[in-house]
Length: 165
Image (cartoon, rainbow, N blue to C red; front, side):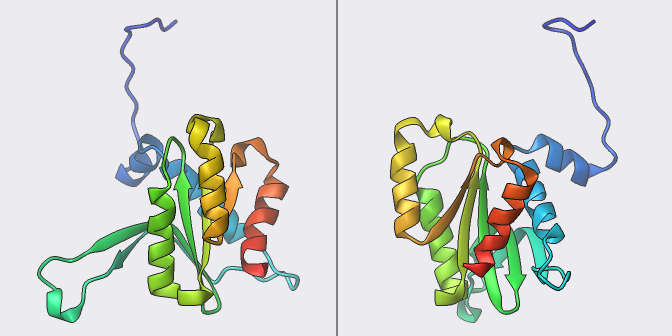
């Protein structure tokens, strides 16, 4: 049996699997993307047309291609021509994450973009939780809190409602 101080090693199928398992937050991103890909509309077709995890967005202009400005969107989904920008947080974060999400969504989706923040362990935010909730609501950012504390059906319903509302 293992005891404190014992060494353990793991083998991974490939680097991508290792990255998902060992990088904080990546597993949440994969779970959100997987759930999005399972959602069907009333006709039984996939609700979201395209889903990407870790989508890189290049803000660079043609005049300034020397130093590209890149932002990563944790999960980017499309429904018809409507982009859904999703930020996934599995630990402590601050309101800056909301502003980043708002900025990217405004720049690349204008008034049509949908914005969502999915976060685990809201209790870790302590005194900032109510502020973050309020700011997210003010900015039109949907919140899905503690997805591991709700049923799969409820999580799917919340993700489906992002586009429908």
